[in-house]
Image 1 (tube, rainbow, N blue to C red):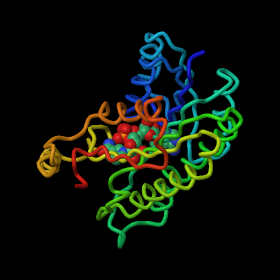
Image 2 (cartoon, rainbow, N blue to C red):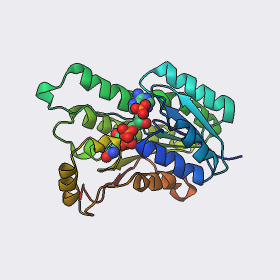
Image 3 (tube, rainbow, N blue to C red):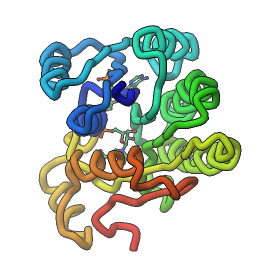
Amino acid sequence: MNKVALITGATRGIGKQIALTLSKEGYNIVLNYRKENEELESLIKEIENSGVECLAVKGDVSIFDDCKNFVNEAIEKFEKIDVLVNNAGITKDMLLARMSKEDFTQVIDVNLVGTFNVTKNVISYMMKARSGRIINISSVVGVSGNAGQTNYSASKAGIIGFTKSLAKEVSSRNILVNAVAPGFIESDMTNILKDEVKEEIAKSIPLKRMGKPEDISKVVKFLASEDSSYITGQVINVDGGMLI
Ligand code: NAP
């Protein structure tokens, strides 16, 4: 039977590319989405064209019961989840002096509490199976910090602490937990910036370019595979050298 990968926030950007990359590796895909978008049906078809099954499950990761429901749907269909990729994330950037409490807590609720909500609902199945991979998408700013992103950096640093602690808790059950910390990646999240700003940032990156979603999905593929079976509790920076 094919392995099963659940990816949150998988209809756009990095999450979509992770779903496509893992489908090409032969994983059945559980595609979590929050908002319907017109490309959902064509994405499902594209995934199925790799010869695997795809289940799209609606749910907001910041709502615990949504996560419980979509994890149950996935288990009903596939009976297991081998790989969980906690990818869903948002930004609400503002200097702290002007940031509202709502914008702080909303980012924490989606990025960090969302990671808890989905993982909490998946972990018992992995523990029973005595096998599993959890890959959390953090960010370089969770390591380095960034002006204007106290909410986002705190959420992404929290994901790193969560990753390391859970890796220690579940290592005896052969469940490996790692984080990927992307740098500056082409997606809707970074498309809001003006071209001049993007060019300036790209110039400051040692590899002189923004990353592509594929740069992240290839590392996720590695962390999901047997090739990484002696790696747990790590944060892999995929950032063109930003944090050197
Ligand atoms: P994106 O293009 O904005 O996509 C974000 C995805 O998350 C969308 O599919 C969105 O769904 C989903 N999402 C947001 N809130 C959700 C919720 N409450 N429940 C379920 N899904 C939700 O961003 P991206 O660049 O692909 O980012 C993916 C991950 O990489 C995020 O965790 C982000 O923080 C991280 N990251 C990105 C960069 C970068 O430079 N792009 C750098 C470092 C880390 P909807 O379509 O429904 O909104």
